[in-house]
Image 1 (cartoon, rainbow, N blue to C red):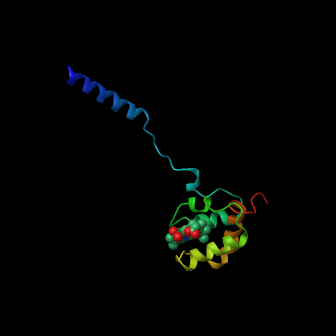
Image 2: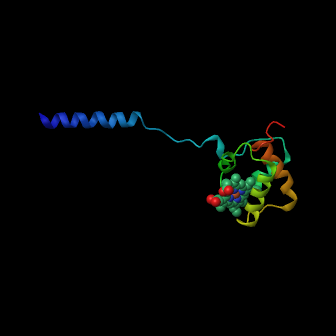
Image 3: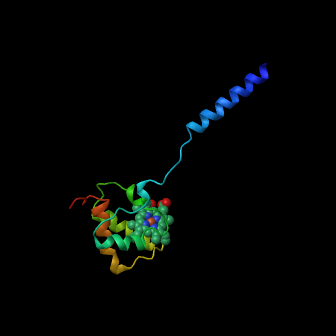
Length: 105
Ligand code: HEC
């Protein structure tokens, strides 16, 4: 009698576990935010090879242009990101207007 009850409880527990199971979908931050700015395509080509766009999404929204400039330079010089110097202004412009303090400008 006792054994049967134990099995029943076990079955109930397994069932409850299955119901509360969650699936983690990649958040929206995984991809760069689309933009008509020329830097969008350049950032897609040069900024998300090593990490997802979540790194950009987690930066302070009030970060000014200089902050993003330093960030891109740091990626290039410290982590050897293959960023072309010629593309830097466009990429920085896209970043500060999409993730920094020039949003909506
Ligand atoms: C060669 C690989 C590589 C490329 C390409 C690259 N990054 Fe990174 N990035 C890294 C690494 C490694 C870190 C993690 C540094 C850490 O954990 O301190 C990082 C971190 C970051 C962070 C998080 C903030 C921080 O200070 O750690 C941001 C924002 C960022 N990258 C933006 C960019 C942008 C913008 C570009 C394109 C210009 C870019 N990354 C291209 C390697 C790369």
